[in-house]
View (tube, rainbow, N blue to C red):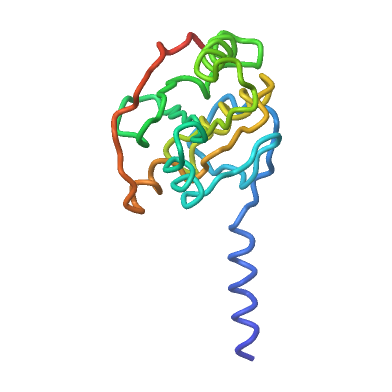
Length: 170
């Protein structure tokens, strides 16, 4: 008879754990909510893999982009793009500004590894920014779902971003 309460408990846990379906559509509101565990056209990168990648030779390091709205300590070497995860469509001013910025920082190399992140797994801004980069034709886009929260909690160094753009109009 002890099995029945255990099964009921497992059923309750499963009902509360909602799987968020990945989508290639930009999320236009409620950016602070649970995110999917995968992303169409890009790849999720974990903390250990990202730490290893940013310690590699400079020519092979990914470009990392912090898309949080407020300027604050970030991953070392991050490029700060406030507003890159907002906007209304793949044809808006945000997309045009992101296209120009990525073209400049990658020197036109669409195969360059790009990593987008924000606060953590309850932040859609980096998901949207990664989708935007995929839509622009970048072939090695990564989404650091765990974000700066997990990076810092795990003892990762934090620093001021190295570059910032002016927030695009929404």
